[in-house]
Image (cartoon, rainbow, N blue to C red; front, side):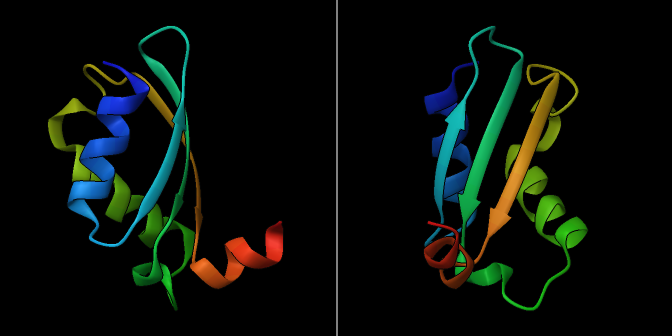
Length: 79
């Protein structure tokens, strides 16, 4: 599993999302995902939305995924 593959899966599963995924060992990854659909949702709900795009890969090919989930407005303010 590569960071680019994970980025593609997340962006395909969350239309309009932008994902930055990093990970050097092929099983542990960190991702920052910016998506308008996160608006009004608690962090746990946002994480579940991202995990849903990865399906059975979570816990298998992807051993761990650390997530930072932001709306576009939150991302603009975090810069």
